[in-house]
Length: 112
Image (cartoon, rainbow, N blue to C red; front, side, top):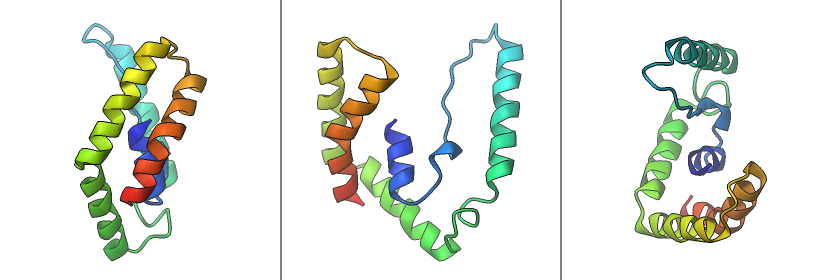
């Protein structure tokens, strides 16, 4: 969620990021995940160009995103958000999206 929000904040299609788990015993699943993700990236096109961002501007935006994810403010906000999620004990996609939007959007937007 956090990575996708940051990508969205700098104008990069968040579908360029995908995190899936696969154990060593799940080779067919791993191959499927990589094949699907590779096809998605090919469909989206070159980074920056597909989003209409010039290379120089893309570098600036990526640097801003790196500064943000390395910032203490965002890390602390993320930590308090995860504590809140543990208290709620609700890890549904809808609840995660609601909590992240409420607690992290402000920190992300102010950092970018």
